[in-house]
Length: 437
Image (cartoon, rainbow, N blue to C red; front, side):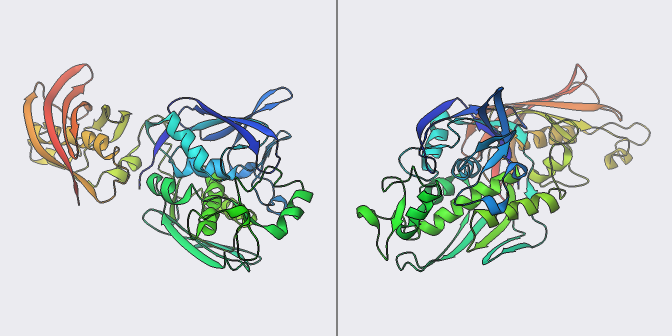
């Protein structure tokens, strides 16, 4: 599985009241550089304080009541889960979340939908670098009271949830989704927070739900909804629980590959499970960052390209502008198997393999534009104007530069050049298509 780093294209803001505090708040999404992560920026007594959205900054599970809270340097940010779920679910990995008021504002409804709409207004920009991700390689389980959260290996990222309430309109519900931006936007983001009427007064006595109302949250009262409310989904409650879980899993600080299954879980168990993953699993395979955090290393390339020895002919991607341009490196060693026969005593890299290496670099550009590159291959459909200007010898480092000239559906045309230092050694126009493996 491959995740590219992404940020918002432009700055976008909203204003409203905090769900629990009831206080006025303003929140702004701002573009962030690669490898920044999701970071809250809040006013402090001595200037702005940056609080990374990482589980290390979450308050203890015992202190989590109806919301997830981050704290650093004495500055607290409440109810972060809906915002983080939106960014996480929409694939935004780098973003500065500038917040005034101590809690993200609610506008319209207490779900992730207003924040998805913010992302839509801002736009999303691929940053041309693979993102660290967390791969579940063995089953992991947390039990906390009645709650249970389990993660097991999977090809993608799936979240399943089970709930059971005495209120007959809620009852027992379960749902499961393969989480990707299109699914999150349609099936999860609109699901609103909910409460039982008998619990509302107790919450307010604790200083919670002060900004909640029948306009922004669901209130259940003995088998019916208060104030003429209607459900957006028959199982809206369990979908909101999935939303909350996604926001809490975002505190791992990287996308997750695996199947997370929660039962009767709330923020305390969600955050404690994320904390457990951070302690025991962040040491598991992380394809990125390599030594040079602005390059694709070989492990990242192998995540997207199906080629393997002896036919993987690209060692590093040094630049990728999605949909436009890619630059990659092939280090040519005397140990290459083709030098045994091409030619004994006079080793020269075959021109056909120079073009193949060029095409593989172009394949990274094409496959990185696909939402899910699993099971996809890039096939040659044509080669035009190929020229070989100089011989490529053992010890050379080939640098390929490819520009995307035309992209129509799965078909594309690229202009490629190959260089050794400042010397042009090969060039060609390549036609390719993306096919299912």
